[in-house]
Image (cartoon, rainbow, N blue to C red; front, top):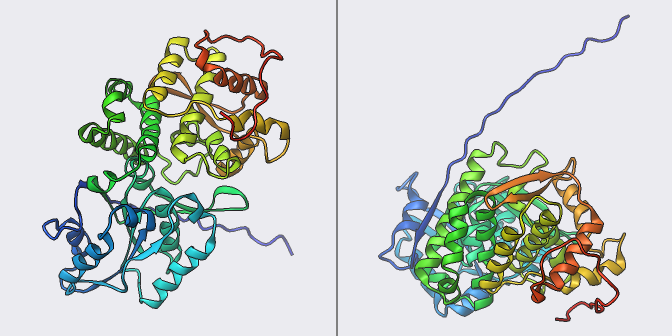
Length: 414
């Protein structure tokens, strides 16, 4: 007998996604019917079940919000039914590190009979949206998720995208899904209570997308840096809108919205940012870590002759102008553990592993002009860390060797 025939069925599947990102304020005011209309737009005669998950920090900063949410849905109970009072969860990155809360949300989905035509409404910062989104995406193979981002960072970046995740094995976003939301509602009133640190931290992602895609947007942030620091609502509203718009344009037009390839341009500066968050036990916020990561990679591009020194200086100056850090002492301190997972440089391999395939890092040839590289010289990266450490001296950027007068750096020092 000869060899058995080899056969293959070549199957092609096309799936289209569409969702809206709304910009409004006071979404739980009965005069604002956006949320009601979103939940009932496909069948106004059928009652929909909802589970609302609320960031505890947001609830504390906005007394009465949980009661207002309950009252809002009570007014529309004929079409929208809360299965329970808003479920409070801890905010911040730690909520992604402990699977207990993830399991608790799955239990509430089961207990409340939340099905694929029901809704999970996630209200909170990026970490809460990531975790709740992962819970929704993995229950019944996907429940409709409505995101209500409550930080600058989540309104202009993470909250409007298609990713959900939790952390595992000491690695950020190790478990996750690509699952577009049913809708996103950016409520300007919910960011007004943010502490200054979170207000400023969200600007880093706007600077990132401007550096990659829009020099005029970068100039806008430069011009309005004092207003942004002073918490000017109009300036911040435009920054959020433009950043979200550019982010969504990239997802829609990049040809790889679910990142099947090895390139992730919008993660500019993130290979070291993710590692820095982990090494600092998340004492650095994501926005702060991204600012530091962008400064590190911009310095690298400058030393490699791709980015001019005046452009490099504009980048550093802008981060400093909006009150964001350009350096973290944990970077140099971690080099004592070079070759292990406790070194900042191990973030390169972890980033490659997370992407799959070859290492692909986005760098800059100019403001608004990104390009990809597939390897980075670790000795130059170490020099960049020392240069950023000494940046306050305002010395010209050069390929000068770091001498023995560099002070010892320990985690947590200034």
